[in-house]
Length: 166
Image (cartoon, rainbow, N blue to C red; front, side):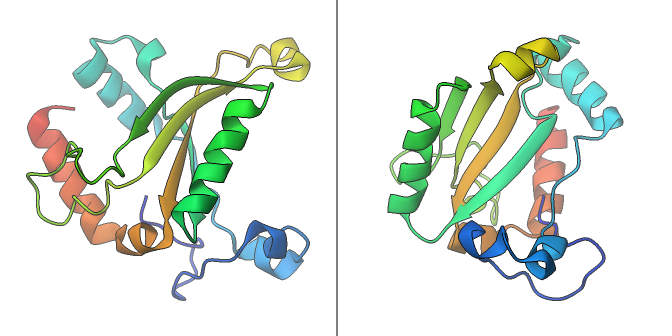
């Protein structure tokens, strides 16, 4: 959420996975997001879902950032074609004619322009571990949107979310 590479104060740099996956120096700098904090998960379950924790779809969340819409679309297609992936929900707020849920709050409109895919990994291994029903959130966004997703915008989002009681 608007974070960077841990304690590193250097500006964020976006690199292709094909460049990063075999470079230990780059891999050490990648920021892998933590699980949603327990207190926030409880708060969200109570505020938004009447205590039904099965509706929490973003305990585990990651963001994949793309150079262009074509690459983002190709990734989404591959996810849909992957036999180990069961897509639970898709939210696309990139369509210009479709208002996002945060249109009323200045500064959040551009942050919310992304594709959110909630999915389960459903294969022999995940079934044997009892994880085939665990829902993960994958956010697909373009570099310009990722660049405006920052701490200030996230604070505005938290204020807006709390005002809505979510």
